[in-house]
Length: 139
Image 1 (spheres, rainbow, N blue to C red):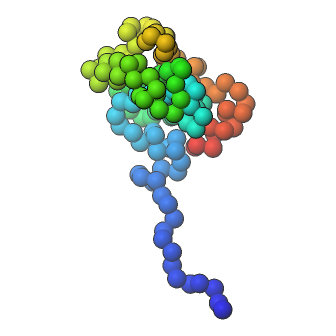
Image 2 (cartoon, helix red, strand yellow):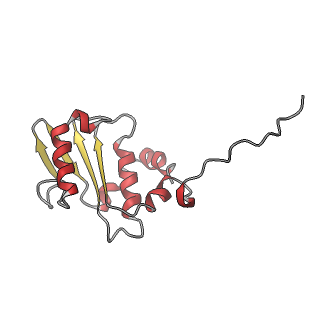
Image 3 (tube, rainbow, N blue to C red):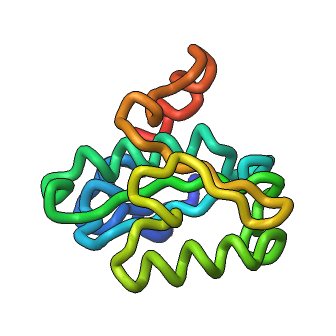
Protein backbone atom coordinates (compact mmCIF):
# COMPACT_ATOMS: atom_id res chain seq x y z
CA UNK A 1 0.00 0.00 0.00
CA UNK A 2 0.93 3.60 -0.57
CA UNK A 3 0.69 6.67 1.56
CA UNK A 4 -2.74 8.13 2.12
CA UNK A 5 -2.98 11.23 -0.06
CA UNK A 6 -6.51 12.20 0.96
CA UNK A 7 -6.33 15.77 2.28
CA UNK A 8 -7.30 16.05 5.92
CA UNK A 9 -8.89 18.95 7.71
CA UNK A 10 -6.94 22.20 7.78
CA UNK A 11 -4.73 22.75 10.84
CA UNK A 12 -6.44 24.44 13.76
CA UNK A 13 -6.18 28.20 13.75
CA UNK A 14 -7.09 30.79 16.32
CA UNK A 15 -9.51 33.63 15.53
CA UNK A 16 -8.01 36.80 14.12
CA UNK A 17 -4.82 34.98 13.15
CA UNK A 18 -3.64 34.94 16.78
CA UNK A 19 -0.49 32.90 17.24
CA UNK A 20 -1.22 31.68 20.78
CA UNK A 21 -3.46 31.99 23.79
CA UNK A 22 -1.88 35.26 24.95
CA UNK A 23 -2.23 36.80 21.48
CA UNK A 24 -5.85 35.65 21.35
CA UNK A 25 -6.60 37.33 24.68
CA UNK A 26 -5.04 40.55 23.42
CA UNK A 27 -7.74 40.59 20.71
CA UNK A 28 -10.46 40.74 23.39
CA UNK A 29 -12.12 44.14 23.15
CA UNK A 30 -14.38 43.97 26.20
CA UNK A 31 -14.03 44.25 29.97
CA UNK A 32 -12.80 41.02 31.55
CA UNK A 33 -13.39 39.63 35.04
CA UNK A 34 -11.32 36.54 35.77
CA UNK A 35 -12.94 34.85 38.76
CA UNK A 36 -10.73 31.94 39.82
CA UNK A 37 -10.81 29.36 42.55
CA UNK A 38 -7.51 29.61 44.41
CA UNK A 39 -7.47 25.82 44.77
CA UNK A 40 -8.30 25.00 41.13
CA UNK A 41 -6.13 22.03 40.10
CA UNK A 42 -6.74 22.47 36.34
CA UNK A 43 -6.88 26.21 35.62
CA UNK A 44 -4.72 27.22 38.54
CA UNK A 45 -4.00 30.78 39.70
CA UNK A 46 -0.79 30.93 37.61
CA UNK A 47 -2.90 30.61 34.48
CA UNK A 48 -5.28 33.28 35.79
CA UNK A 49 -2.32 35.62 36.33
CA UNK A 50 -1.01 34.85 32.83
CA UNK A 51 -4.42 35.59 31.30
CA UNK A 52 -4.73 38.83 33.30
CA UNK A 53 -1.22 39.89 32.18
CA UNK A 54 -2.18 39.37 28.55
CA UNK A 55 -5.42 41.30 28.99
CA UNK A 56 -3.67 44.23 30.68
CA UNK A 57 -1.24 44.44 27.75
CA UNK A 58 -3.86 44.60 24.99
CA UNK A 59 -4.16 47.70 22.85
CA UNK A 60 -7.45 48.78 24.45
CA UNK A 61 -6.27 48.15 28.03
CA UNK A 62 -6.61 51.81 28.98
CA UNK A 63 -10.25 51.76 27.93
CA UNK A 64 -11.22 48.36 29.33
CA UNK A 65 -11.33 46.90 32.82
CA UNK A 66 -9.44 43.73 33.67
CA UNK A 67 -9.75 42.22 37.13
CA UNK A 68 -8.41 38.97 38.57
CA UNK A 69 -10.16 37.78 41.73
CA UNK A 70 -9.24 34.58 43.56
CA UNK A 71 -11.78 32.90 45.83
CA UNK A 72 -10.61 30.66 48.64
CA UNK A 73 -11.55 28.02 49.49
CA UNK A 74 -12.78 27.25 45.99
CA UNK A 75 -11.58 25.07 43.15
CA UNK A 76 -12.48 24.73 39.48
CA UNK A 77 -16.12 25.86 39.89
CA UNK A 78 -16.06 28.88 42.21
CA UNK A 79 -19.58 29.87 41.16
CA UNK A 80 -20.76 26.49 42.50
CA UNK A 81 -18.41 26.14 45.47
CA UNK A 82 -18.71 29.74 46.71
CA UNK A 83 -21.97 31.01 45.18
CA UNK A 84 -22.55 33.89 47.61
CA UNK A 85 -19.14 35.37 46.91
CA UNK A 86 -19.28 34.70 43.16
CA UNK A 87 -22.76 36.21 42.85
CA UNK A 88 -21.86 39.33 44.84
CA UNK A 89 -18.70 39.90 42.81
CA UNK A 90 -20.42 39.26 39.45
CA UNK A 91 -23.35 41.48 40.41
CA UNK A 92 -21.02 44.38 41.19
CA UNK A 93 -19.02 43.79 38.02
CA UNK A 94 -22.02 43.92 35.65
CA UNK A 95 -23.15 47.14 37.38
CA UNK A 96 -19.77 48.72 36.56
CA UNK A 97 -18.65 48.67 40.20
CA UNK A 98 -15.36 47.32 41.58
CA UNK A 99 -15.62 43.55 42.19
CA UNK A 100 -14.87 43.95 45.90
CA UNK A 101 -16.79 46.22 48.28
CA UNK A 102 -14.21 48.98 48.04
CA UNK A 103 -12.24 50.02 44.97
CA UNK A 104 -9.13 50.08 47.18
CA UNK A 105 -9.79 46.73 48.86
CA UNK A 106 -7.39 43.88 48.21
CA UNK A 107 -9.54 41.34 50.06
CA UNK A 108 -13.11 40.84 51.20
CA UNK A 109 -14.73 38.13 53.30
CA UNK A 110 -17.95 36.40 52.28
CA UNK A 111 -18.65 34.16 55.25
CA UNK A 112 -16.11 31.31 55.09
CA UNK A 113 -14.85 32.42 51.67
CA UNK A 114 -12.28 35.12 51.11
CA UNK A 115 -11.80 37.01 47.87
CA UNK A 116 -8.47 38.55 46.92
CA UNK A 117 -7.91 40.76 43.91
CA UNK A 118 -4.68 41.56 42.16
CA UNK A 119 -4.14 45.29 42.56
CA UNK A 120 -1.04 45.88 40.48
CA UNK A 121 0.70 44.51 37.42
CA UNK A 122 3.46 43.26 39.72
CA UNK A 123 0.99 40.93 41.43
CA UNK A 124 0.29 39.33 38.04
CA UNK A 125 3.91 38.41 37.33
CA UNK A 126 5.04 34.78 37.67
CA UNK A 127 5.89 33.96 41.28
CA UNK A 128 8.35 31.17 40.58
CA UNK A 129 10.58 30.17 37.65
CA UNK A 130 8.34 27.12 37.13
CA UNK A 131 5.26 29.36 36.83
CA UNK A 132 7.06 31.51 34.27
CA UNK A 133 8.03 28.45 32.23
CA UNK A 134 4.60 26.88 32.48
CA UNK A 135 2.61 29.98 31.57
CA UNK A 136 5.17 30.99 28.93
CA UNK A 137 3.81 28.12 26.86
CA UNK A 138 0.57 30.09 26.48
CA UNK A 139 2.16 32.71 24.25
